[in-house]
Image 1 (cartoon, helix red, strand yellow):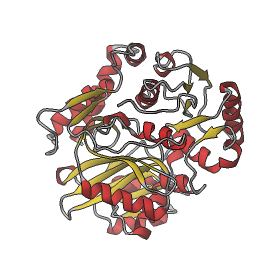
Image 2 (cartoon, one colour; image 1 turned 90 degrees about the vertical axis):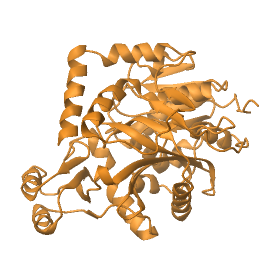
Image 3 (cartoon, rainbow, N blue to C red; image 1 turned 135 degrees about the vertical axis):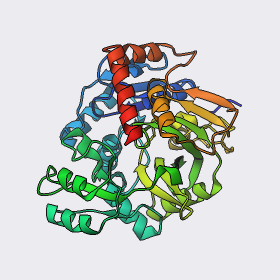
Image 4 (cartoon, rainbow, N blue to C red; image 1 turned 180 degrees about the horizontal axis):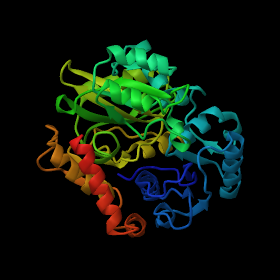
Length: 411
């Protein structure tokens, strides 16, 4: 039965920063566009994969860094809204966009539709420290963590810490400016920690976190949409088979796996904090104590959201559009056994994981279906545009990816 989407209410992909090869935005354009919803997107230029999707009505070229003053970004969104000419559902693809929308609901509420949430909550959830504090407050398992405020505190911590441990940037937004570390960094010794800390300045913006050994852990993901009362209208669980960079980055390959315990954990946490909207959670199951530990909370659509679809054809983006336009969201269990592959990063990830010997026990032998991030029979141009932009400068780029994966797997 076809979904009853409101074709009179467009969708707008909102992204800040320079990352043109974003498959999640393309997935959202296709998901709603196939229902007849007019789709618009903010893009870096006219030749990004998203800009060339046949399901996109118009690309608004607006190069940003994500570090602009909020007033400027809000005005830019309002200007785009006036050009669209009718209220549109906002679909953020990054933390900067999700936080901006939440913190400026009054200004944006007249021209756009979006889930209403406590204004400060998305920023707190996107922060590693804020998320850890919320987990402690509400009894949600998370890795042990420290938040040193000075080099002296790092020295004190290092004297009694167990290694290896993990260093991450404390706040989500520093990747647009000067991050202390490049993503998740595994630190194997006290000497290495102190050496890195000398470069972090007087106020280190890092979290030092317990390392969960990959040979004793499994990477799980939860994608869901919660209504204004924090009730899940769409709930999905799956296993991350490979990521890029290895074991610490974006999903490259994943499977749908039913996990009622994990779904209940996510539902309870969202109800406790009162969140509304789309979520993308990363958790690691620690076999040593049998707990699912929450690592990341993205208060927006995840890039791999198209892995998940219900038997009634619902994904989290469709659920949000239906709910915000007053339509009922059809019920239905998730389609188990589906597989998702991000073509341009799964090959180097596969090479790295083979060298590390890591496997997941939950991958189905025969997937019930495969969703490719880029290639789609009804929308070919994003795939070929991705290839053209990805391979520059050709084989050298692919070789560097392979070498980086090899080094990450052998550390």
